[in-house]
Image 1 (cartoon, rainbow, N blue to C red):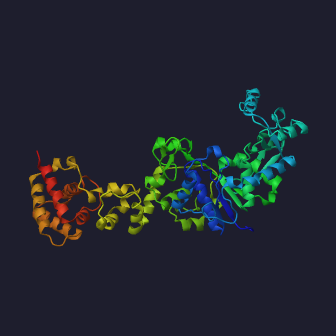
Image 2 (cartoon, one colour):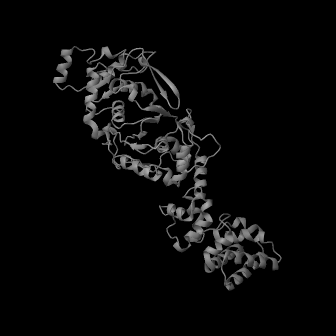
Image 3 (cartoon, rainbow, N blue to C red):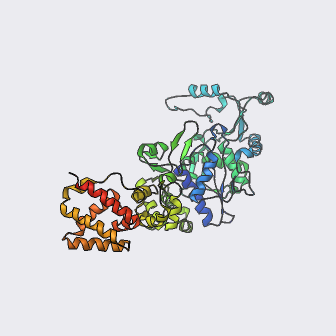
Length: 506
């Protein structure tokens, strides 16, 4: 790579950040860092009608949580700003006008009703959705069909217009995709896209090319849904700046859900998140749940995203961000769609939770995953016992709630059928022993427990389950003597006594 690597992520501030969008960020970020380059975030807000308040801040909050912060952006600054397209509006008109002057684009004065009439008049069995293209352009009201005098008058009268690209006829447009190889398009099948809207704002097609040129973008990576737009962008590069200045392109595969492309509806239907973080639609107050709030940690989230369409050629599945930077290559990105598996996603998260230190796990659960009445003095000990049992951060409450509050119900069905006087007397004696015990730790408690069982001719294994249910309410949790150790003497004995009353009741 002769010139410095500069890649960009260019989201529209219209809502939450989808799984696919964050993966696009990740692959851009990894490629830039692997090659000593820069990662830029550019806000593409040219469609003001779709702008949603708060969406831009949400994007940057998401990238911060994912630990994929850009080198240049609206928030981070940089020498190639402004990094918000609406603030670059003045620079686009000159390029659109140049295209018209050079014969590569034209003014179109059609009203919305005229466009609708065209779509109805030219509809046929062979063509259900007529486009504004080489077949219809001369039948519309534009600078190709009107005289120069008519066009000048319309412009002088400030008649609203858009500028459209004039797609050539029967020309093969090609480029080399870093993932898909050589890709070819027939220009006759592509419509004359609007480049500049009536409000003077550019469409994505013009803005992305001008901005990439002005920001010296070396590689442009985006989802494969943008592949049909590639011929328009290639021609704009050719007409405005020269093909030799065009970035290298790659179009990432789709992320697939149970029924095709993964969508927000899949999340609500199947019960898994599709956005990185919670997003509340301001107009409807509709909440779409995010991976963060579901209980994922950044390391697990990034790991699962990386392997949705890429691998390093080995069977390795767990990668830190540093390892991903070292191993990432565009050659290993798949061209076929990647299926999202929520169970697999949770597996990645569980593996990363297990690798967290107690201090790091504590930092994670302090952000909304702690029981209200937790005892700070016990917290690190509790974390050490239950951390590895948590697939999601949200599991911590369930896995640890009995440490902070005695269970409201007990699983008596698992105890009563085999309960007898001998077991009742055992626990009465255990209470007396534990009341007199001076050294309260798991090892001592277990030793005393087994010694009393042996003296009474009972098998410890038959007594462990009742003891566990006395302390936690059910058949779950870490080692029962570790639990008693954390609960301390008074609380442990209190729970045994209450349970004995319940188990012995007729």
